[in-house]
Image (cartoon, rainbow, N blue to C red; front, side, top):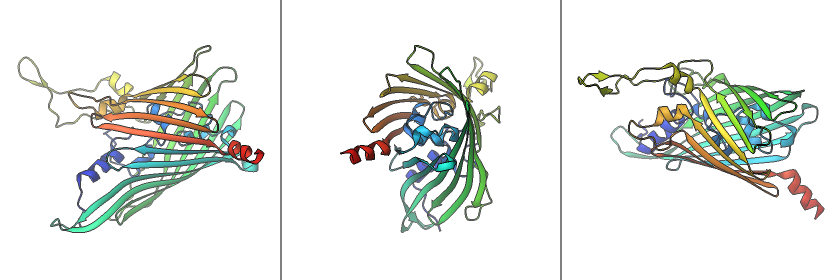
Length: 353
């Protein structure tokens, strides 16, 4: 049975396998690539990869590094929505709560919907419609020991494209160091460890989008700025992809000059930079740059802002609102809207009334 791959479905598949912060060298070769996708506004604003920026009020940062889970998040509920091309959308929900002797735990749900598609037979005759989506259920915990925090997340991931389904059991492990006197943190996250429980029909079990990320965040004293630098794909030095079919430039003798890999390019593709302008406790501005995304998704003659992202946070009473625009290519990018509410404060205020 042919499901009729319309242009919108191709957009969805490209989004899930290539638009993520992963190189084209490995993009599309792993199942559940959506697990690499930033699931909320702050992470997207800082370039899509960050394991060290203090999360404070936002429980959704636990998905970036489980060691960012803290007691300060208890009672915080975060909801995030990503609007991408066509009707592709992602919803994420994260809640942190106290669990007695277990300390602070956090439960989450991420749902990525690719929309509805026309289904046809081999001759192109319509057979109705079908849906495609990915999801992940998660539970996170963390333990604090002095300046160090160790965290872990267990996820049940699933995918359904029409009647073709797959599932996987996934784990993230994280560590965080907080300097006792300075606003300096170092984070480490080993992500997407696990295996498919059920492969797609007619396919073997595929590897998951494993990654090892190391980063730091630093706020200089007396400056309202916090800088972050994060390295990803640290387990593989060369993540440069050069299309063997791409045409190179011509020299003065009309000989084609093929592009070559350089050490500088290999190193730079591993790093993502982010900055936060801290205008008090209630207003923040953010910006990020993902060099790998820019190199992989730009066109030969245009980039369209690929790799750049900008965002803002405003906190009003019991609510925190985050907005981010992240550019992927000349075709556009994604818009993130995140709302975090302090349920403890809300219910306390209602009870006092």
